[in-house]
Image (cartoon, rainbow, N blue to C red; front, side):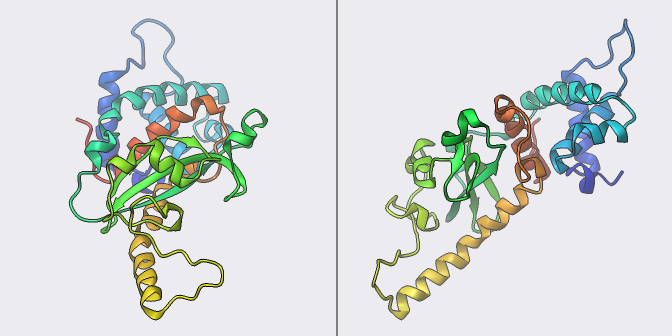
Length: 258
């Protein structure tokens, strides 16, 4: 198996994660019926599920087991990975201490439009339901932080304050026009009937070109397709799944949890 293309991790990273999982979780009990899947297979299934957003029925067919077996394996591995990968999900105050200018932008992780949370999670900007996350990186494109979820109906300026980022980021941080008035370096917003001179246009173009790096970082995060194609599971499990995938993103980027 070509690990990086299928699971999102290199062979070394996969082995390291499997070793940590073995120490954390007792998979095959000494007495009783042996499990239908080995721990290695269960980890591969879980990573394939998150990386490609495959259905449990398809994974069951690929590994010649039942769909309930796949579902139980994913839930068990997820709960273990959430704890194992916790060191990679550092507090914002620690992760945002990188020197130099930073870049921030918000993104919507789409979910099914559950009727019970339709107004809360529906984003008018994106015209779909989901969760708002703030992504912060360096000008060189190194991911520093992905914030916890807020309802998709909340705009980026609200999320910026709600996560306490107004206490951690200053005017050296680049952002788009959604953050105007928050003390960040943003393009000048044109008022109705107003015309910009050449210098303002040039500065806006420069800021937009520099901050485009965060768009590429977000696109890279969403190569974990469960964060891109629409979250199908009950929303009560979203925080756990997101925490696991966030940890996997940092692990794939070279982070360590040991």
